[in-house]
Image 1 (cartoon, rainbow, N blue to C red):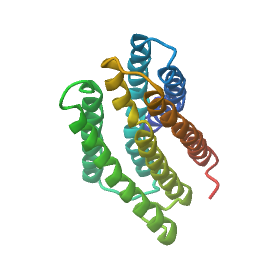
Image 2: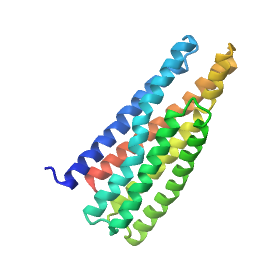
Image 3: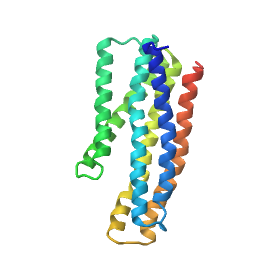
Image 4: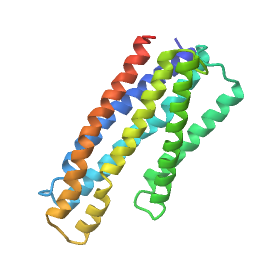
Length: 222
């Protein structure tokens, strides 16, 4: 029960649960952030809550593929050396540090810098995942199980949707800047409502992809 493989499976499930569950908390907070009838201080409190909740799924997003790689190696679904695993985990923890710095420095001048680094890593990771997934499906290597290769592609799609969600609510930053200056009006309200409307439908796609990943991991259909 306490063998390394079993413990990693438990961690994999827990990370998955935090990813999906916390995302709903983020979605709920966004509903109040866009309400123009609420005082600015109230909307900013919901923004702080959103950011605090969102760091949990962002942490899970980073750790899941590296836990998955370790599990795939242990079950013989991919042949990688110990040195490669060490490098992979080093990259994972470096990326996790960037994610947390982007969160902790949100209101500081260096915040946008760490956010750009995080986005760059995600774009690079999307390319790597798509390449590994397609090659594995076509050649049966480096991942021998097709359901794992498919999960890589679904995970890449999740990262793409996640980036779209960021773009969708990009106007919120300008909206809060203008509200803090005492401005108001339909154009400012639209910065929030339009962003959430676009993000809402993307969130539904995001959750569907998460459920698909869970099904692939449990059913292992091919």
